[in-house]
Image 1 (cartoon, rainbow, N blue to C red):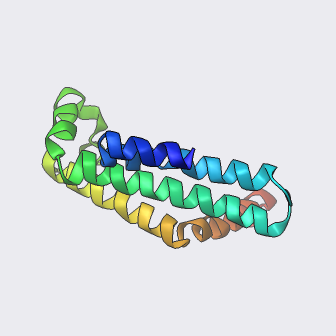
Image 2: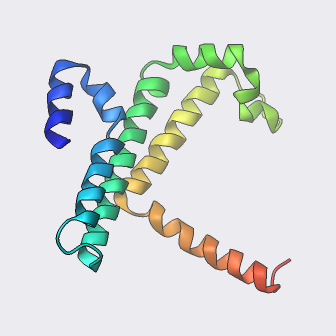
Length: 139
Protein backbone atom coordinates (compact mmCIF):
# COMPACT_ATOMS: atom_id res chain seq x y z
CA UNK A 1 0.00 0.00 0.00
CA UNK A 2 2.79 2.42 0.91
CA UNK A 3 4.75 1.65 -2.28
CA UNK A 4 1.59 2.08 -4.34
CA UNK A 5 0.95 5.44 -2.69
CA UNK A 6 4.46 6.62 -3.57
CA UNK A 7 4.06 5.49 -7.17
CA UNK A 8 0.74 7.30 -7.52
CA UNK A 9 2.31 10.45 -6.05
CA UNK A 10 4.93 10.41 -8.80
CA UNK A 11 2.40 9.81 -11.57
CA UNK A 12 -0.40 12.08 -10.36
CA UNK A 13 -0.58 15.28 -8.36
CA UNK A 14 1.31 14.79 -5.05
CA UNK A 15 -1.15 17.08 -3.23
CA UNK A 16 -3.98 14.73 -4.15
CA UNK A 17 -2.02 11.86 -2.65
CA UNK A 18 -1.39 13.86 0.53
CA UNK A 19 -5.13 14.49 0.82
CA UNK A 20 -5.57 10.70 0.90
CA UNK A 21 -2.79 10.11 3.44
CA UNK A 22 -5.32 8.58 5.81
CA UNK A 23 -5.24 5.45 3.60
CA UNK A 24 -1.56 4.59 4.26
CA UNK A 25 -2.21 5.53 7.89
CA UNK A 26 -5.00 2.98 8.00
CA UNK A 27 -2.75 0.43 6.27
CA UNK A 28 -0.07 0.94 8.91
CA UNK A 29 -2.67 0.54 11.63
CA UNK A 30 -4.03 -2.66 10.09
CA UNK A 31 -0.54 -4.09 9.67
CA UNK A 32 0.32 -3.27 13.27
CA UNK A 33 -2.90 -4.70 14.66
CA UNK A 34 -2.96 -7.90 12.63
CA UNK A 35 0.74 -8.75 12.46
CA UNK A 36 2.99 -10.47 14.96
CA UNK A 37 2.48 -9.20 18.46
CA UNK A 38 -1.02 -7.93 17.72
CA UNK A 39 -2.71 -6.60 20.83
CA UNK A 40 0.50 -5.64 22.60
CA UNK A 41 0.76 -2.09 23.87
CA UNK A 42 3.52 -1.18 21.40
CA UNK A 43 1.56 -2.38 18.37
CA UNK A 44 -1.56 -0.52 19.49
CA UNK A 45 0.56 2.62 19.91
CA UNK A 46 2.02 2.12 16.42
CA UNK A 47 -1.47 1.69 14.98
CA UNK A 48 -2.72 4.82 16.72
CA UNK A 49 0.30 6.80 15.55
CA UNK A 50 -0.19 5.65 11.95
CA UNK A 51 -3.82 6.70 11.98
CA UNK A 52 -3.10 9.99 13.75
CA UNK A 53 -0.35 11.00 11.33
CA UNK A 54 -2.30 9.88 8.26
CA UNK A 55 -5.41 11.80 9.23
CA UNK A 56 -3.42 14.89 10.22
CA UNK A 57 -1.52 14.99 6.92
CA UNK A 58 -4.81 14.57 5.03
CA UNK A 59 -6.40 17.45 6.94
CA UNK A 60 -3.42 19.76 6.42
CA UNK A 61 -3.31 18.99 2.70
CA UNK A 62 -7.07 19.56 2.37
CA UNK A 63 -6.88 22.84 4.32
CA UNK A 64 -4.21 24.21 2.03
CA UNK A 65 -5.52 22.79 -1.25
CA UNK A 66 -9.18 23.64 -0.80
CA UNK A 67 -9.22 26.68 1.44
CA UNK A 68 -5.92 28.51 1.83
CA UNK A 69 -4.20 28.08 -1.55
CA UNK A 70 -7.30 28.12 -3.77
CA UNK A 71 -10.21 29.62 -1.85
CA UNK A 72 -12.26 30.39 -4.97
CA UNK A 73 -13.71 26.87 -5.17
CA UNK A 74 -14.87 26.89 -1.55
CA UNK A 75 -16.20 30.43 -1.93
CA UNK A 76 -18.22 29.28 -4.94
CA UNK A 77 -19.70 26.47 -2.83
CA UNK A 78 -20.62 29.05 -0.17
CA UNK A 79 -22.28 31.23 -2.80
CA UNK A 80 -24.40 28.26 -3.87
CA UNK A 81 -25.05 27.03 -0.30
CA UNK A 82 -24.95 30.03 2.07
CA UNK A 83 -26.22 27.87 4.94
CA UNK A 84 -22.73 26.35 5.18
CA UNK A 85 -21.31 29.67 6.39
CA UNK A 86 -21.72 29.04 10.11
CA UNK A 87 -20.32 32.47 10.99
CA UNK A 88 -23.39 34.07 9.41
CA UNK A 89 -25.65 31.58 11.17
CA UNK A 90 -24.37 32.64 14.61
CA UNK A 91 -24.80 36.31 13.79
CA UNK A 92 -21.26 37.29 12.79
CA UNK A 93 -21.20 39.30 9.60
CA UNK A 94 -18.44 37.57 7.66
CA UNK A 95 -17.84 37.44 3.94
CA UNK A 96 -17.36 34.07 2.27
CA UNK A 97 -13.65 34.86 1.84
CA UNK A 98 -13.30 35.48 5.58
CA UNK A 99 -15.13 32.27 6.43
CA UNK A 100 -12.99 30.22 4.03
CA UNK A 101 -9.79 31.66 5.50
CA UNK A 102 -10.98 31.00 9.06
CA UNK A 103 -12.10 27.47 8.19
CA UNK A 104 -8.76 26.68 6.56
CA UNK A 105 -6.81 28.03 9.53
CA UNK A 106 -8.93 26.10 12.04
CA UNK A 107 -8.63 22.91 9.99
CA UNK A 108 -4.84 23.30 9.78
CA UNK A 109 -4.66 24.05 13.53
CA UNK A 110 -6.65 20.96 14.46
CA UNK A 111 -4.53 18.86 12.11
CA UNK A 112 -1.36 20.28 13.64
CA UNK A 113 -2.60 19.46 17.14
CA UNK A 114 -3.49 15.96 15.97
CA UNK A 115 -0.07 15.51 14.36
CA UNK A 116 1.63 16.77 17.50
CA UNK A 117 -0.45 14.45 19.64
CA UNK A 118 -2.17 17.17 21.65
CA UNK A 119 -5.59 16.75 20.03
CA UNK A 120 -5.81 13.17 21.24
CA UNK A 121 -5.50 14.44 24.82
CA UNK A 122 -8.29 16.99 24.42
CA UNK A 123 -10.88 14.24 24.58
CA UNK A 124 -9.85 13.07 28.07
CA UNK A 125 -11.22 16.10 29.99
CA UNK A 126 -14.36 16.04 27.84
CA UNK A 127 -14.94 12.38 28.70
CA UNK A 128 -14.41 13.18 32.39
CA UNK A 129 -16.99 16.00 32.23
CA UNK A 130 -19.43 13.67 30.49
CA UNK A 131 -18.99 11.04 33.23
CA UNK A 132 -19.50 13.67 35.93
CA UNK A 133 -22.62 14.94 34.18
CA UNK A 134 -24.02 11.39 33.95
CA UNK A 135 -23.54 10.87 37.67
CA UNK A 136 -25.48 14.05 38.29
CA UNK A 137 -22.87 16.35 39.80
CA UNK A 138 -23.19 18.78 36.88
CA UNK A 139 -26.55 19.57 35.38
